[in-house]
Amino acid sequence: MTSAWRQRPVGIVGMGLIGGSLGLDLREQGLRVQALVHRPATAERALERGLADAASTDRAVLRDCGLVVLALPLDRLLDPPAELVAALPAEAVITDVGSVKAPVLQRWGPLHPRFVGSHPMAGTAEAGVEAGLQGLFQGRPWVGTAVTGRSDAGALAAVRELAESVGAQWLSCDAEAHDRAVALISHMPVLVSAALLQAAAAGGEAAGAAQLVRQLASSGFADTSRIGGGNPELGTLMARCNREAVLAALGHYRRQLEALEALVQGDQWTDLTANLAHCQALRPEFLSS
Amino acid sequence: MTSAWRQRPVGIVGMGLIGGSLGLDLREQGLRVQALVHRPATAERALERGLADAASTDRAVLRDCGLVVLALPLDRLLDPPAELVAALPAEAVITDVGSVKAPVLQRWGPLHPRFVGSHPMAGTAEAGVEAGLQGLFQGRPWVGTAVTGRSDAGALAAVRELAESVGAQWLSCDAEAHDRAVALISHMPVLVSAALLQAAAAGGEAAGAAQLVRQLASSGFADTSRIGGGNPELGTLMARCNREAVLAALGHYRRQLEALEALVQGDQWTDLTANLAHCQALRPEFLSS
Image (cartoon, rainbow over all chains, first blue to last red; front, side, top):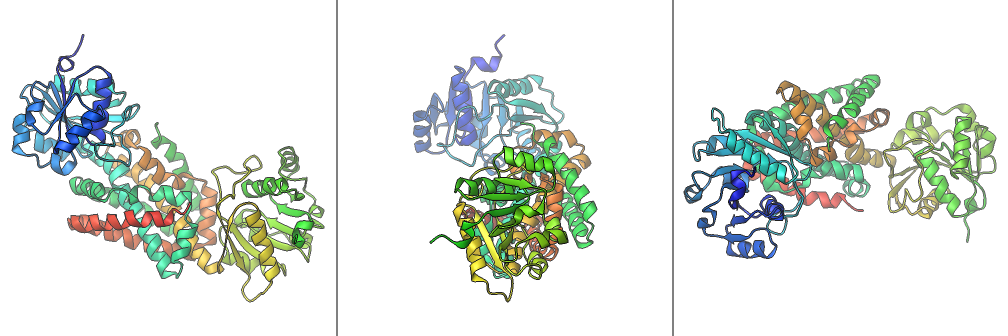
């Protein structure tokens, strides 16, 4: 049985990394993709790249869509223009792709009767209309979060089918649990990693070894500092839109780091080894794919 | 002109990752490598793998060597058996490969007249006699540190030639500067990364999302936690043998992380973006190769 949403065009708002990649994968399945974008040049390029069948700055492009994916940055998602909201078909299932869920559900629950939050956990360092690529979601988790107190099983099922059709692994949980989890494994680590870059620079300066720290940094430092050296606007949005959970995660982090520092301070080498052995055992649990 | 040390066998004490890799590269150059190891089975395997021309548990294997590399773990290097010291030819140049230099120079300066500290900044996650591989040092920094107040230009030149012959990039600096630099870019980051693993586990537990944090962790978390999930004995040795510099580096780190946390706490999003943009600009300075 073909689901209702598959018999109509899929709308995508925004043709960045996530929107563009999704467009490519859905068209590969034979679905018709209609994209709403901000600038005419983006529409032109999205069509050239085959990210959508139709792409326009005119909101009417979303008319007739059975499912619309809001592939917008978090700040724009949380502050949507009234014209965009008005252009969404009332009977369509609407979802987003933001990395924070509780504020999105709070904002969008009242704006559309069939809104479902979702978060595909996939990405690259790239952004913009050139960034989209096929197979981005393959094997990656895709989290769905329903609006509290609303029971629209059909809407959640449609988003799940969308996610699974592009190879993602569906998970459903409540928005607060999602936000606390991503604070711990994604948003707080950006700050942990950023602080490392600044500590190496400041400490090198203080030790009269500014050049030496740069010369000696190797693959371990490169890996640990990667996400701290990423897109500053994205890092800020994550902290801003998930502020409480990020502060709680930083609290957990500080306690763990202080415990390790106390072991070094106290020359407790056997305990430090046991502690690091625990970390060594923990890590594979976090490397599912 | 061929250097004096190249006209005699090179001795290597220890056939682990560094000793074995060095043996492979030196033999490739036509040099004769003679290895002293701890166990007969290691000697046998080192010969089978072609890591050395001769390998033995008998210290006499070092006789006639013009240059001897002590490729031992830091704890054994800092507490060498008297018999090993006695077996080192008096006229040979002696060097080590430890990741901390000041304590090594303090210990070994009085033990041998031609000792020079050195630290090849190369490695993999592997250890032991099976770990050695060709080309490990290619393009990697190799730091040399002379014993303070001793002027044996020939000894330092010999170690430099050794390093450059296997493709490493030679750097020479004083031991204290080296130790402070590696604390900042290598030893302290192990603790920063380890604390992240424990924070994600503890925070996930506290949020009732123990399974969810594990399911959602992706490549960013994998990179940031890699060195924290490494060999616990090695992490402990680095902290123990470079304790003062690691504590100072943790101090720098804590100040940077607290500054970032204060920006989140104070809703200072413009300042946070500027701070993260600074990190983004800093990182390429630390990625030389």
